[in-house]
Length: 154
Image (tube, rainbow, N blue to C red; front, top):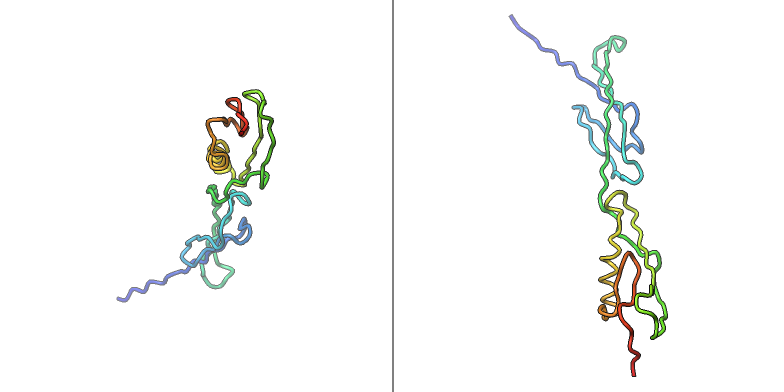
């Protein structure tokens, strides 16, 4: 007695939801990315996958579909940028202590926590580097304030 096993092949395909042809599926049913994904452009996908047997004649083929949800997670891919390339201001030497001197803003194109700018930290470092007189100024929520009376140079 001889036993013969016939293997039926399955054909897999993505039938809908493949925005920008972002995914591929191979003959083993392995789903893979085909392009770089961008959370800010397409944060999620709802793919419909079909598995079909390869019986002959084709009229006797059977198939099944499955919905797959894919959520893309955001990564920190954009650096924050100040809204202006340069900030400059003039202040009188007799300006009142605590007077707001300058308002700085920064934006980040990332979503979620990655898009939250740490403007105080960045501005503190830049302010310290630029003015090298941090004891005369304070920084709060993007505004620079004078902490003590400025003495005019001789």
